[in-house]
Every structure is written in structure tokens, then in C-alpha cells.
Length: 301
Image 1 (tube, rainbow, N blue to C red):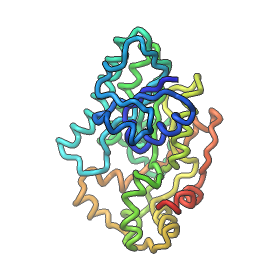
Image 2: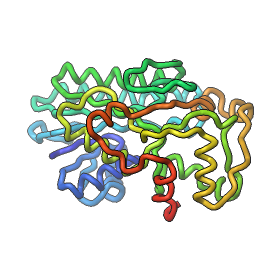
Image 3: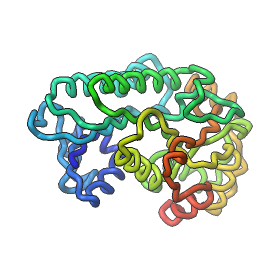
């Protein structure tokens, strides 16, 4: 199978590439730094700077669209919002326009999204049948991203939307930001710590995307998070225990709001999301509970 990826050098993308290389698939990554693709994604993965570098008669079986500037790296100034929008919606529009020029189109488009699609859900249990609870900037971004990707259905392409939670991995992502403060004994809950945190182990994230790729009846949105979300204070407690450090220093909500502005809502809000459609389709999570996921990663943290 020939798979085209955007965002292939990101955390999820590079793990997918290594997994699919092992399965014998042919991989092409559309990247701003195509020369770095083989080093990051694996020898044999082709990096391209322009989609037009793929020949019209080079059959493409699937597209996995994961590109997007990190949403929680810095406050949402006007310039940052424009970058976040362009790196998701504008890029997806470019991808779809290019697909429209091809006589042979892929069977499936798997497009990234996030549980932030729902906004801050409070105590509500959120399934794929739920509507957005609160349309903040992150929610609006995800809604527009999904709506853009869904236009591929008109091109005869099966579209799958992956609403990802916090990805737990030892080589990047959410845990890499927490590692230093927690190891210094400065970790703790954010605000009151009651907000729900939907999470997923990187191995399960890779496995579920591959599952949705292979299952030809899969389409529409899927919550990509473990069946058992936890509250932020429980997450902090368990991460501290895993790292053999205390996790007793809360970060007051007013400090987060003062320093991060609207971005603070990503940290102080949450989603009690459950992967109802994935489970109904027959996907089995390897890591159902947070402690088993952290124990698996602990030797590499």
C-alpha cells in the first residue's frame, strides 16, 4: 500500500511511519524539510516538498493528514491563531485541491482532529454522537478542520476523523513537557485538578489509526482516547508516583489565565471523552488504564 502522510515528522506521524515500514508499506511524507524525513521517519520513507512531485500515474492508496502547528506551545496571539489555522485548514484545502486534480484518487483520507472539538465538557460524558459543548477557539479550529476534510467525500474518498486526546509517549508530546518539573519535585495539578483528561498511549494511537485504515466500513469521527479518562489531579498523582517524586504543588488557575490568556482553557478545561465508536467497531486497547500506560513508559521517561 502506498500511503501519503502530512505531519509525518511529528510525534504520531513518525511512530506511524516506523510501524508501517515494518508492515511493508510504501510511504511518502509531504514536509517543509523533506531532507530530514528519512532520518526521522525511517530509511526508505520519501520526503517531498511539493505534492506535484508525486507523478500522476503513481498510485496512492491512502492519505493520512496529521499536519498542524502545536496548539499549546505559546499564547494565542492573532499571529499564532493565523498560523494554527493555516497549518490545519489551509493545508487541508491545498491537499484536497491537489487530490481533485488526480485521475486516480486514494480510497481513504484519515484526517487529524482532537477531543478539543467538544470544547470544555465539564462533567458530561462525551461520545462521537455528542455536539460541541462550548465553541472556544480550539473547538472552532477542530470543527473547521473536520468540515474541510469531509469535503473529500464528494471526491469519492472515504473520510475518517481521528479526535485524539493527550498522547502519552516517552519521546515527545505532553509527557516531555511535564518530565522536568515533575522530576524537580515541582509537579502538581492544574487549577483545582478536577478537569477530565482524555489520554492515549502512543502504541494504541498508532494501532487505532492502522485499524481505521484497514476497516473499509470505518468513516466519520472516532474518539482516539483510552476508555478510562482521569481527572487532572489523579494524572498528576500517578505521574509523580511513576517518577518517584511528589506531585503536591498546584498551579493556581489565575496564574495560568494571566500568563496564557485563552490558551489556559486548554489546561483548565477538559473532556470526559470515551471511544464508543472504536470499541463498537471491535478495536481493543492495549492500555486501558493510566497506570499501565505510565508503567510501560516509565523506564524511558
